[in-house]
Image (cartoon, rainbow, N blue to C red; front, side):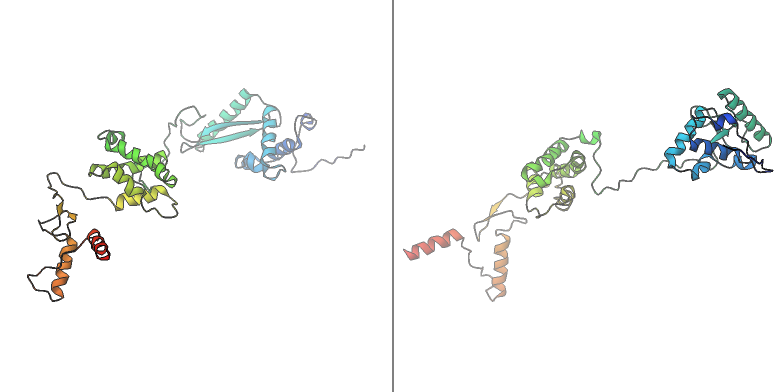
Length: 312
């Protein structure tokens, strides 16, 4: 092999022969080192190791491996320092000869001391990062006041343990909601959904609705497809919620209609049910006398008996 070398007059980098023949450094690590040493002082301060490795083949894995090789060889050192506003930034030191940790720390300290003297290295208490929160508050980064979290869920919020312990309705409501899966497997609810629906179901029980009536209101007349059982049950619990009966309100006892002998609940003491009163009003509108009442309605059993007697 013949050798003919011409020394360049400018723009060249000196590399120690020990690094050229170092088999522990891969081609990517050696190329990254040469690129870093070829930078000028001003450009080196503005360039990161990641930017130098942007053109290397192999991607991030190859770059990380090259950095670890240079770090083990003592050619690349990193430290973290606080900047002017208190932010922590990483500084790297590349050398053409291996350096120990203590030597690299002295070079770092000398560089930052010189930068602080020139007014470019941060406040007097800026230095190497220590464990714990930052002692320097960055301007304009104060956190806003804590705002209450807004519930965006379509389901009502779950009751607090204190509210749930005030009455037995919550426990019974949760039991009814959990048992809905026995009536229809499409109404299977999760534990979180049950906790959110329990306040609405407990309100039904608090208004005098029995557990059986509540279960019937939630399971009867279900659509063919139930995409969201929780949403369906919430809609029924809210839309069919019965009125609250105020304490002391008297409820009329059932009575028997004078016109059809059916049981009904009178409101103002009327003797006939609503159907018979409607029939009487229609009879008078058709020309019947004012004092004359509509014919007495005959139930179906009487009609069947009459037809059977006539046929016999």
